[in-house]
Image (cartoon, rainbow, N blue to C red):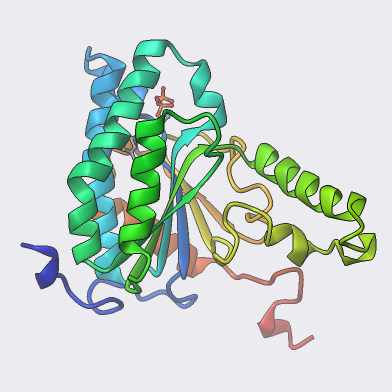
Length: 256
Ligand code: FPP
């Protein structure tokens, strides 16, 4: 089935969840290495299968009607892995963009990159710019690829940019509000994730969207990322639907 034949957003298979569908789902795709090791395969094979899981999951998310999907594809800390694994991850990202960009574009997906673009290899930096430029006008879904992303670095960069404006006399310190900071993050303009999924049974955020996750629902699933797909996504969405989101207020049923 081609993407042209995909169901329209919001139609089939949306879980009958009282909380409804999240607008923005962010995913920490974890467990590739363990998946491969358990099978006696090199870790890189786990990442390769992880890309296949990503394709399945993105297709399902489009069909279900999720408006924004963010994926944690490479963290600022991932550079400390062995060189061969880092190179393999870079190669997979390049291949993913080269092979899948046309299909994503055809399916109406706008690609946004979050993360630090300084010091990236020129070919990767160019591919990221091309992916954003080609898809900038698409409206069906936004795919945020968090690449070379670290949340503390992102917040520090935002603070530095605002401090420079204050130092240059262009900004009053009183104008440094949560909105001003959010506007300087690499996710600027993208609503905060309603749901953050982490696979593989690990239960932490690992420097991912620390600012943006203030009121996100967190769902941790034991499944390893290469095994992920439509069914696991629907389970996470059903769990989200059972949550009651209060954003620091009171439950609606209490009536205040
Ligand atoms: C975590 O597994 C996953 C990563 C560090 C990278 C995620 C990358 C992919 C799914 C494929 C590449 C992405 C794109 C967009 C092409 P892990 O290695 O930490 O697994 P482990 O915890 O079992 O060792």
